[in-house]
Every structure is written in C-alpha cells, then in structure tokens.
Length: 591
Image 1 (cartoon, rainbow, N blue to C red):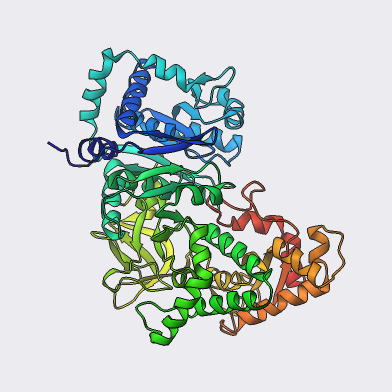
Image 2 (cartoon, rainbow, N blue to C red):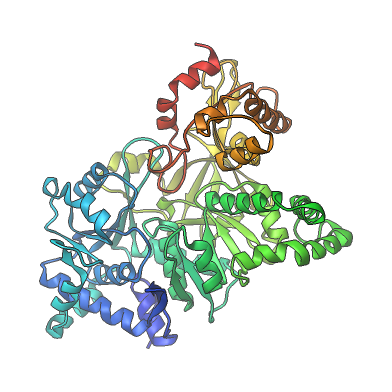
C-alpha cells in the first residue's frame, strides 16, 4: 500500500515504491557523470539517520547545512534529518562568518555540515561562539569530521527500528525547516516551514506545471538553500525526473549541452545574463547575418500569445526560429519545454523574446514565507499573460488590501518567524499573509505585481514612485546592468546606475574613446554619460512626467554578493547601496 505523501521524505519513499529511478541523482566525478539510484539514496539516508541518532540527535534538534554547489549529499542528509524529526537549517555559502554565527546561534543548531574547505574555514572561525557540537564536511578535510565517518558510524543497522519509530511519529504539521531570508534590510529572519507547507505546495505546483511523469532530465544549479530550488528538488522526486547537478554556475553552459535538460527554473538575473551574452554575440556578426539576427530580435519583442499577431507574424517567426532562434535552443541543450522564472520581477520583454524563440518563460510569484508558490503562468486554458505572474495556484487565495498590498491565504503559509512572535503577528493577520508587495488582480484572476510596499516612496511634490517598474524598464537597455531609483522626499526621482561594463568596454573601443581601461575612467567620459542619458530618455517616454528620471550617477564598481550590494538571490540591498554611494546621492540632488 502506497502511503499518501504528507511529509517531505515521503516523496523519496513513494518514488521507490512506484517509480524507482536508476539515475535519480547524477553528478560529475573526474569528468564522468555518476548516478545514485532511488534505492541507494534511501539506503544512504537511513545510514546517516542511524549515525545521527548515535551522535545523540533528537527530534526538533536543528542541523545547519551549507554547500557551495548542489550535490547528492545535501538531499541524502535532508531525508536523514527530517525522518528522525530533526530540522534542516540551510545556509547560503556566500554570507560572512558573522552571519553564520548569528544564524547558527539564533536557530540553536547543534551540528553544521559544510561541503568543502572554504566553507569549513568560515564556520570553524566562529564555532566556539556557538552551541555547535561538531562540524562535518562532505569533502574529506584534515581536522574536520567527515561524511565518510558518519557513513561508517551508521553501518550498524541495529538501531534502524528507532529510525522507523521516529519516522512514524513525524506529523505533517511538524516543523521541517527554518530558512533564513537574506533580506534587503536588517538581520535575517528565520522562516519556519512545516512538512505540510512544502508538500502541499509542491503537489499543487506540479498540477500547474505542464509536465507528466516520465523520463525527463532536469539540471539543478540554483542555491538549494533557497526555497525555490529546494521546492524544485522535491518536485523532481515527485515526478520521477532524473536530477543532474551542475558542476558550477561557470560551467552551466557546458552542463546544459551535456545533460540536454527538459526543464530548468531560472531567476531573472540569470536570464538577463544569458540574453546579454546572446545579444553581444549577435552584435559581433557581420552583414546579412547581423541584420537577420536583429530582425529576429525585433520580431521577438512584438510577440503576443495565442496567435494574436496573426498568420503573417507567425510565418516570419517560423523563419526566425529556423535561422536564428534554433541556435538559442541548442545553447540550452535543445530539449527545454519551458522555463519557470521566480524570485524577483522579470522584464516582460525577455518573456516575449524567449517565448517567441520557442523557449517559453512562465513567470511565477512566491516567497519563502509561502513555501514558495503563490501563482504561475501556464499556456493551458488561457493561463498565460505577459506582464503578470499568472493565476493563483489551486487552494491558494489571493486578495488585494485597500492599500494595494497582496494578501495570501492557504496551506502554504509559514508557521511563523522563529523566535519572533511580534513580527509573525504583524505579518499573518486573520490567517492572511501580508506579502509586502503591491499588486493588482484583473477580472480574469491574473496577478500583477507593481512594487514592494516598503520600497515605494513619495517625492516632495507628494507623488508616489514605484521603483521596481522604472528599474525594470531601464534595465532593458544593454548599457544598464543594475539601477536603483532614489528620490524619497526629493523634488524628483533620480537613478544610481551600475553600467553593463562588459558591453560598455566594447562600445568604448568601437567609438575610439580613450580610457586607462579602469571602470572609473570609463564612466568619467562625457560620451559615455551622454550615451546613457540617451537610454534614459528612451525609457522616460514610458513614464509619467512625475516619474521621469531627471538626473543619474554611474558607479565605478560592479554590484555583487561578495561586496555586499546584492543579496544571495541577486536582489539589490537598497540600504547598503545608498550608504555606499552617499556622495552620488548628494551629486544628484546637489547637496
């Protein structure tokens, strides 16, 4: 008898009973793909569970996990921890030692697993300032307890019955994980999600994605500490897909061509980078090939779903697909059925171009606090509308508050913030989660997000400015990689811009503009500022007069996770950017 999937580890056990995979997980060792079957996956998880019990781990104990790249050990450990009633606390690999110290202490973690030497160093540095009993590494490292030692400890099956008893005692309502949101302001918040939260959201999301159970391949590369990729791994197990772990983000292009996946989730920043590289290559073409490339691109920008553009448009699009867009598909492996974009707003123009190219992009909406899915686009039953994040998933309610905030209700709503009852009570009111996002629902149920509630501001003239809308439009320019709209209580909005330096360097060479090669030198040139002003003038045509950007400044640095200007999910840290570029802010407003 197949047990209903109600706990996260049930996904693996039900796959073993109904659809066991020989290539459940696949990863590279010495340039060769190595597979772990469903049976091996569960055997290893039980081995680690037995070892954890011998180490004294009890139900509700917190286990911190951090890995540089996604790997099979993470999923094995996940089941091992969850099925004995303990709690998985994933951490981002890019955060600082002090952040590790805060989260490990705040979460009450008693063990920490790391993937490699660099992460071990960061955790070892703060271990004595925490309640950690030990640190274990997936890689074999000197002076660090190893994954292999746990496998050895768990070899003895004499306490497997204890694992089985604890597994039966795990309830769907029990806490499964605490995920610390990176946050664009303040200290990280620990989002508590139950087995039920994530399981039910995974099941309804599976209904919303146009895939049937079958021999599909997927590539896992987004950080598994993020709920988007975490959910994806459970979804793949539910569907019986073959999961391949990318070697690294740098080798993603090579891995796509090797694995030829049928599906990958994406975040907007990644899709923007893919698009920028494609356009850069197109710019280097000559003659008729270059003309054909940009004709196809312009055609893609006019895309409308459900044949709204008529037969002549689609006749031309067929030519573009054959001559230009087919190469885009090959670069992604040639088998992609569709991409799902989440985590942050995506430029509508990118959805149009990729979908026209035969690589449909379904934008969805979710949060860590909603386990994660709230809504998604889908071609079926007229469920696709560019510029929206689709319709609410089954059994999830969405409504718009009087002030425009998006409210959500359903089994996906978090248990609360760990050790922060006041914030929990402010965020969940009468079972409705206050998302902090501003949006609209149209008559057909499509949800559109217009901005973050906390990020909207008024100019001194009393006009509301929605930064995300302006920023998204400006980022359509090939010259602009990142932009932050400012102007709270000022006479007009301004923009702090991080140019697309890779493209800008090529443009400077083509225009024979003399620089010393540094980013600071490039942005100091009048011709560069004049060219970016032209891009702003084009974007301003789409804005109301009160929204138009009247002044801007360029930054001489690339905004990265490492320099603290982006969160681990590539969102801008607005407060930190403002603090770093106070002088640029003063220059814009001449203070």
